Length: 220
Image 1 (cartoon, rainbow, N blue to C red):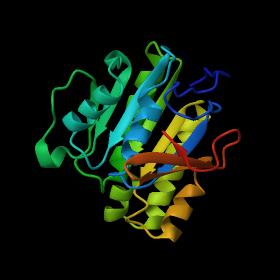
Image 2 (spheres, helix red, strand yellow):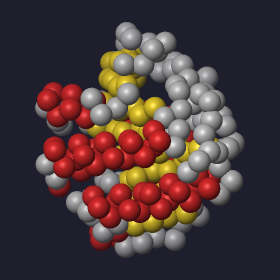
Image 3 (cartoon, one colour):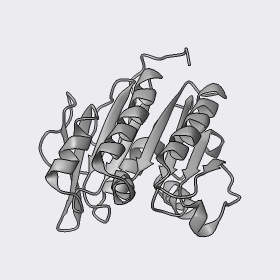
């Protein structure tokens, strides 16, 4: 991978977030039922640059449902630049979907996930795209199968690959199901963290570690 770009990654006018530099890895932390999952998906699918590819790693949601979530959040999703790594193939078998796909038997196979991720990432990067937005949904699921040290090494490796190719990495963790020590450990592996909460039916976010972003709770 030799190409790079100085263009920042933008997130569209419907999110109160400033653009971030190429090579940035972001942790989205919050309840997956309280808007954190949707925000993490939007960070990958709602870019305005037609030269960007999108890669989703699904560890806890069937691939058809995840693709449906992306279509709902981004009605003009360009599937020709979309890749999906399904880590639940032993539960429902491989599916024939209108996107490029790879499968891994289950979320405990971090070596397999890493290999298939690299293949899909390289394919998207080389075929008519300038760079790739990649999302891992979610780190919490990986922690159900492997210990924190092993998952931390895995997140660090994926984040390093993304940073080296001027990509954007989005890692989701359900902070309501993990203790603070675990969340803080994964936070240290990323450049910044977006916390998400829901108050009286309204989703709010705040950002840590990234300059020029809302540091207090902001509605989105």
